[in-house]
Length: 342
Ligand SMILES: Cc1ncc(C[n+]2csc(CCOP(=O)(O)OP(=O)(O)O)c2C)c(N)n1
Ligand code: SF4
Ligand SMILES: [Mg+2]
Image 1 (cartoon, helix red, strand yellow):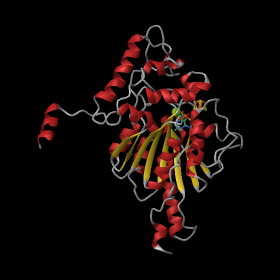
Image 2 (cartoon, helix red, strand yellow):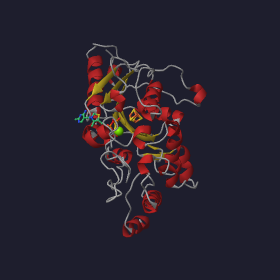
Image 3 (cartoon, rainbow, N blue to C red):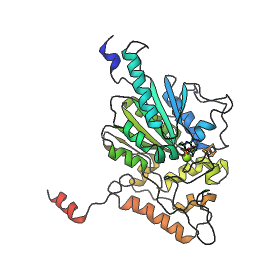
Image 4 (cartoon, rainbow, N blue to C red):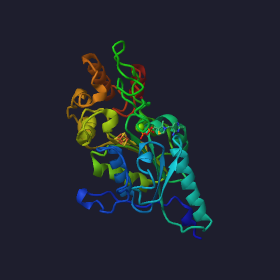
C-alpha cells in the first residue's frame, strides 16, 4: 500500500461562502429530547453538517449524550459513540489512532475520516481537561475536540462547573438572605489555555451558534488543518440560565457584543478575531454586560455592585490583557521597556 495512505491526510473542507452555499444534508436530525431553545443541540447539528458524512462523532456524558440517545432513538445519522464523562480526549485520540492502524494494516479502505469528540464544560473543562491536554500533544493523529459550554453540569440539574460565570445561581450556588453570592470564582479561560499550552495543536477557536456559518467554517478549518484541534462553543441554555427559549439566539449575540465571549481563532500561533469581536478590536463600543446578564434568571439576584464588578472584569480583559480577550498576562513595565529597547 502506498505510503500516502498512512499520512495525516484530511478532508479538504472549503469554507461555506455564505448561508446559501451551506449543504442541505443533515446528519443530526429528529429524534432527540433536548429542551426547547437548546443551543447545544443546534451546535451538534451545525458541527456535523459542517463535517459531512465521512465523520465519526464521540460524545461524553451530559445533555448531548443523554437527550440525544434516549429509549433507542437518536438523531445521529453518522456513526456515534458515547464515552465516559472525562474521556472525550481519550476517545478522540484512541479512535483516530485505531483508524490509522486499521488503514495501515489494510483492514479498511484508506481515506480521510473526521473524528470529532464533543464534551460539556463539566466533562471537558473540569473532569476531562487532562485527557484533552494529552490529545492535543499528539500531532500524528487527526481529531477535533469540541467543548459545548452551557456553563453548568446541566444534565444532572444545573450544578456549577469551572465554566459557570461569577455569581450565577445554580443548584450548588443558590443565593440567600445571609449570602447573596455563593459562587465567586471567575470562569476558566479554556480556549486561551489550550492554545497557549499546546505547541503541537495548530488550531484553536471559539464559536457561538448565533453566528452559524462562521461556526461551521471554523469546524471545517479545524478538520482540514488536521492534527489535534480544539473548539470552544458558548451555548445559551434556557433551563440552566433561566430565560425564555426564544431568546437563545439573542443571548448568544449579546455575549459577543458585550465582549464577554470573544470570537477568535489561533492558527499556527497567530490570533485572528472574528465578526463583532473584530469590530470591537477595531474600536466599536462594547454593549454593557448588564444587557446580557439581566435577561437571565440566574443573575436576577445581582445588585449594582455585582454588575459593576462583572463589567470591571470584562473591561480589564479588553484593556489590560497581553493579547486582549485571549491571553491574560501583563508584562511588568521594566520587562516591556527592556524588550522595546532591544
Ligand atoms: C464520572 C462521572 N461522574 C458523574 C456523572 C454524572 N453526570 C452525568 S452527566 C453529568 C453532567 C455533565 O456536565 P457537562 O459535561 O457540563 O454536560 P451537560 O450536562 O451540561 O451537557 C454528570 C455529573 C457521570 N456520568 N460520571
Ligand atoms: S438543560 Fe440546557 S443544555 Fe441541556 S438539553 Fe436543556 S437547554 Fe439543552
Ligand atoms: Mg455543561
